[in-house]
Length: 365
Image (cartoon, rainbow, N blue to C red):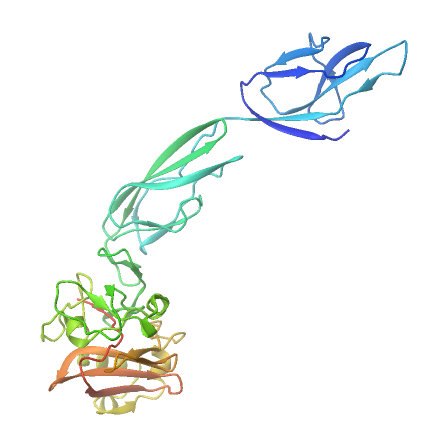
């Protein structure tokens, strides 16, 4: 006989078995763990019986009336007994490399769990309710995490400590200013961000970015969705934070800087561009190097074609072109790199005004 109704109770709860619409005959409460083999409950020959079950089981009432019908039973009820949860957050770890780790807490039957960060700055949990969430932390930092589990029978928590090793190129970089995460890649002796910078407060394309102690950014088409995809667009002065010193930190995180024209040439030559091609001015050079640099290319730098913001406050060329500032000036203008959806080369140009809004990558000091 299968179960027809199911109920959940906590271990130690009292449950009153009570017969309704009883007519006549001898009654006997019965219990089964498989709904096949039944046993009588001691003292269960009354219409009402209080029980204190410690295991899940099926229950029914057997009625014997020798003056009328053969013995029959009532509908079966299944009582599932739930224990209070016992949290397990996994094992504490130290010297974690790569900037992130997959957590390994226990799952919760008939309940839920929640991660929280008790100590440590700028840590991020991919999904606070997932026991196997990914945790990202800052290099050379230690965090205490708590896994709290609860169900209808109680609450429990457990804690772990996670220590991250000093930064090594190839790790995820967490920007301590806003918590945004950037993959990194080592090419030759240079460590590059493998994602466009996206720091700052969004302003409208029609406005100029200003030296006001607040980093400002444009989003393509004035839509923040594009900033999530391509990063921000920055005028040269804002990117440099109003210094003209080549290789300045500018708007990059601490320990990183805006690459110069020479730094870009070093990158290009490392990826196979001939040095004489690298020096070409206002031309597309290095066939194949652009392909290696663009998203999906062998360099893993993942250059994106996020377009640009031009003088009239409009944005153009998203998906077709990508433009990247350098920290090197050329007269009143500045050197940049150009990438095209239809070209495997890299453009090196110096003829954009600094008030254009272009993409930015950072290089480690």
